[in-house]
Image 1: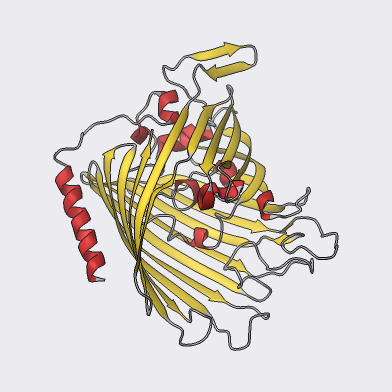
Image 2: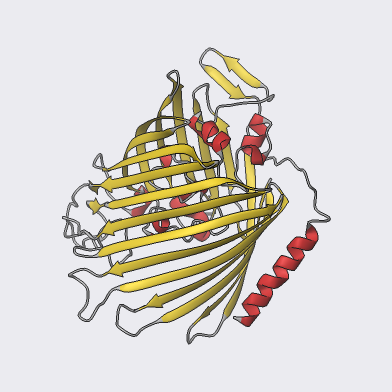
Length: 436
């Protein structure tokens, strides 16, 4: 613990010292910045990937807005004159200490180097494609592939006078609501500082690889979407045309000078077709239950000369067992192994990010999970509780290049679902992320 606190203190000293020598103004050059000619923080709150109101409008416009960049135009054609792409490089060092286990320190440089191609596909259509490198970072493309399509989205929006309507599709780890999602609480825009790794919605498995297609409508006051979703085909699910249903609603307004978002989500139904049983039976195919309810809140604004973001969410997933006897496991959401009939998953989190200087931010957060086993659990199983406290900091060398420090202390009560098996895991991560 002492070493971890010293690491945090050392990072803070370096970050504050660097304020004097780092550039105070800079324009990032990822794909969207190239297309629009706007700096990264024109669309992002505090730091990427969190969105502000302008960023939400840009996304609801299906990434089609352009600045001074030339277009190639003809009948039914409107493309940027150059292909807008971004190369991301990430690396980290992680130290982990668990009760009764010797601490470990791991360098992972680079941890991944995805390539992003994004922007305008036509006058009303845009796309976001992430080519991930191999290994665990390969996302829905599958581990081990040297290069794979990790995440993709395609969006269409039409201006109906005062609001937009859209038809979109995706196959990603951004959550089932990715056909039109701009909350910073979870998913694609949840950020790094006291961010998505505390989110109750993420903890429920909303970031599991998911494919979806649906319709949405919205304006600056919020949006409503209806989507059909299923586990990604990479999961081995025989989806066919049977998909679960997702309803997502978001209200955006201003409260006390803060840009405010209140959202809810509801996923229900089974995804996948019954298995044609052949010997040996292949587990993991057939109808997969998808049941989740969640609420998210965010407040973003200024306190004096400092920007402040406050984020909270709640998620509930009830365990369900597939009607297909060939399927091993239960509800797509909730804790693995604790998601069959009778089980229950409840979680909530609250986080805050403060940016006292133009390129330095700090964050704190707290998360709670309770996982109750179902009828199929082993004898003696009891509810498991996990509480996580987090402190974090980020320093922007440029708008498109950051250094992050994240310290988590997670306490698990009944870690093996057996009374008395309690552990504490302290994790310190120092990472960098640059976008070219």
